[in-house]
Image (cartoon, each protein chain N blue to C red):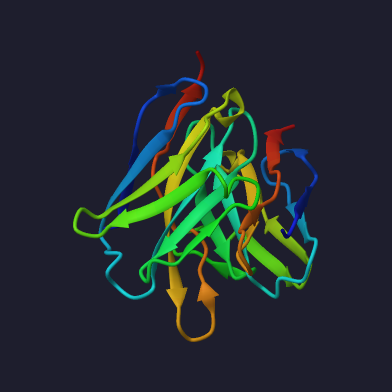
Length: 107
Length: 125
């Protein structure tokens, strides 16, 4: 199975900050990586697919980059609605796997 | 529009078999390229992918759970059913179903673009 490792596990930031979350795959996955946002008690929401493609309706302050084994999710200017947990997921090959999540907290 | 909704028991006893149903609308598993996946999340923990079934009835399973999992579909009812045998308290989780698409232009499977609200299953005697 492909292991997905996110860092950091928790991130404290302020409104307006630029935030970057990293996801590393244990094997090359080309660009078959997605990022999801999850708020407490809610289902995950797709933000980014194919490593850097923005899902329809997602604000442009979210961006993704990377390929192979190293990927990043960047929030250019953190907004109050962005405090949540973020997960990466590889869909290069079965079994699909998720990272352990990064919680973005208010500083 | 696309919607998915999970249903099933909120409480099961250890050793019992869990049966969950995902009822969806806005797409059909008769349509080439359509797929449904199950994912779970123990309280306070990360997401865990469980299984996938596609329009062609191909099935994929989590490595660690594949001996206990079965996924199936009923296209006439727009439903996907997941069974998990020999339930244990560690299987306590919110179970989600989600849609994805298979792209024939060599892109392969997509990300999970629509999710149900999830259903919490507690395993306790």
